[in-house]
Length: 309
Image (cartoon, rainbow, N blue to C red; front, top):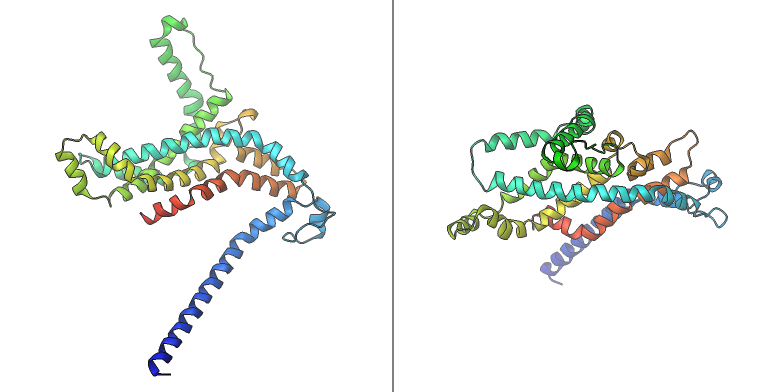
């Protein structure tokens, strides 16, 4: 065997060892991140007595297996899951679409004061939820009902007879208020994501469309929007996760039991002096199913959007 062949074999062995080490590291990372999930699933199927006498991550025995906790969690969270979807899906679509339009106007169209608007939008990302709770509640429950009632009485008083009561405490109206709040709060981050994506689009292509007589809206609809599909996948997944998992705004804006979202019902499920760990784990798994399904279905598009493909 020549020296060149020996060097090639050594290099091949080194590459194989590196690959084995990489796979071992990836496997350790998978185990590390999935271990809490496995523990939650095992606890979900255990009776309370089985949970007390076994390790949390150990599977239940034949005498310790039960579906009662899963049934209780599902019956408790089912209305909240529907309310969360009714609230989160419109908020996600609205914030992503408005963020895309805003980023388009701040990236490909030049106008005076553009930098100042960008600074304000970026500043909106760092406003904590806690800082807006009081004015938010006052707006939705005091200012906004008066504005709507005054608008309707002024323009349509001859139809309504001048007396129209805004149903501010109605359950579906509260879900609408929560959805609009999340959409408004998500516009800054969606704008920032789309703006960084649009800055990589060829300016020559947009300029050629302008020379052909295309309007700003036509350029967005025919050029920018089709190219934005990967970033739409990123913003939709990110925003849906943020909106669906929020509890703070829901506690402030929703007080009708029938219109509570999944996070509110999950918090009520885990409350109390005596903790039922199997029911708590089952509730956590059930509440996480929508976001998990979103990542499974749109995971490939999310990866492409993050990579800028």
